[in-house]
Amino acid sequence: MTRLSIELKEKAKQLRRKGFSLTEISVKLSISKSTLSDWLKNIALNRKALERLKDRKIYGQYKSRTIKLEKGKIFRKEIDSKTKKIVDKLSLDQDHAKILCSLIYYCEGVKGTDRLVTFINSDPSLVSLFLTLFRKGFDTKNSKFRILMHLHNYHNEQSQKLFWSKITKISQNQFQKTYFKPNTGKRQRDNYPGCVSIRYYDAIIAKELLSLYRSSVEKIIDTGV
Image 1 (cartoon, rainbow, N blue to C red):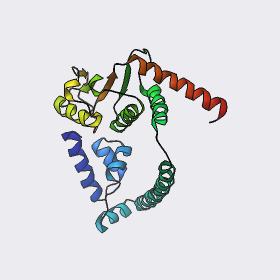
Image 2: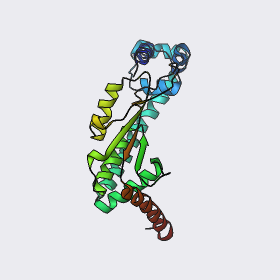
Image 3: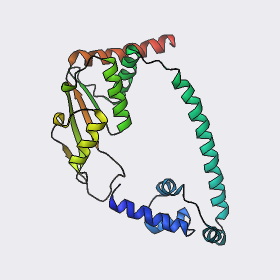
Image 4: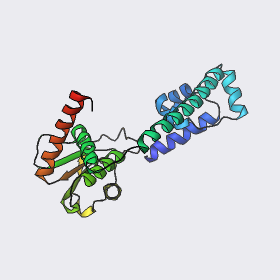
């Protein structure tokens, strides 16, 4: 998060603690209500703040929203518990890892060539998942990986290189020259780590990934298995 974003977030919190509604804060700080809702969802209001909301006839809205948030938390916990039981049954052998990897690759990978594997994404968890499956499913050598970072000029190149090196478990020595994307500087995405293009030079694996995707999709559609 940038320094400007941190300052705005703190101002928003101060206004919320004083009993300002999301609409009021949105107008004052020129921030979307969806962003404010995320920033301020855990702010507890004291008696004075609640009285201000009552005076402005929006206490009912606040109370309704609070109840809705609590119900949402309970519902999410129930869903998390249910999905955890499903995932706990998963047995990930090499073949399953290959198939899952091929599905993710077809969604986010570069499919214009079968001479190398190229996976592009900005989500650290998805990048880590792809590489975990890729390494488990295929016989890989870490030295064959290359990474190209796509950053904006507000990023610190060395910090992001360290960050992505830890996520990918790939040496910084294997990072290629960073590409800096044009940015006006008027809008900066909070916590955006940049985008990485991960390349693995192996034509056989590249061909197998695409073939696995096609075979898996055909079998699932034709047989429902």
